[in-house]
Length: 336
Image (cartoon, one colour):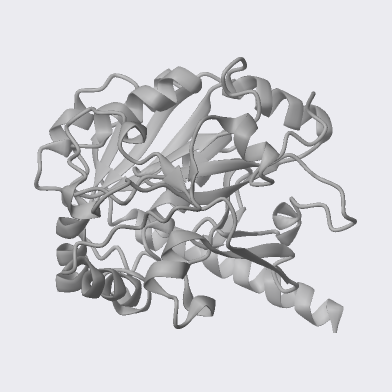
């Protein structure tokens, strides 16, 4: 049985890598500055659509922690973001008008770029509303983390997707171009998480937080997955199987200690819940380009008409990574 499963996973991995070549033809090169990539550079990969308002802070944040080059696919933006990205000297940019959904929600495009440019590099794959934090963030650059992971022989780094939200109505949380979203979205659920083992992918399946309690309170098991493996020492032939929740080969998913100890982990600060959300929801519902025919976004839309607030008295106020470690959200593991 184990042997049959191994062959099945290998076949899936080959299929995922084969479809990358077909999907690569969907991308039009706008700016390719990848010749400037140095062997030691940590690379960031992202797909964006109409995210111009977020991009200046997004790029600045990741530059400061040590990203060496950005490889971005623009999925037919109409807000000026493509022109902005094309003018950034550390950004290589591709565009496409093809279906985000048909490209496995952008992962096929990322996969092609990862195989082409990421081989041998530590690669971070994130959305434009996700900010990675890791142990010792305030005193050590990202390359210090990846150097330590290399020493440990660990090729992947997990992060909990931590939803942050404002105190009042989401619709009234006004966000401006280039602003730090953490100045608005400062609150998070310190508890309210359910963890189960996914024996198929050898990872942990995590759900909960404000989306589970507010938008999926009747069906918490249907709430979005919060476990991600965004940072990987990429090798050509690796493959993300379900967004950045799981990878092949499956050993890359074994990033949590099943014996009761703690391995190193981080968090992705998820700053979705701003006034910009309503426009995103309208686009998602019109185009049905998201997971399960945008069912998650339909639940958000049903609630947005009531100007919801995700804030409740028991939530925490985000301070720093060490606070999250104390709460058990992330861990420094053996990285002293």
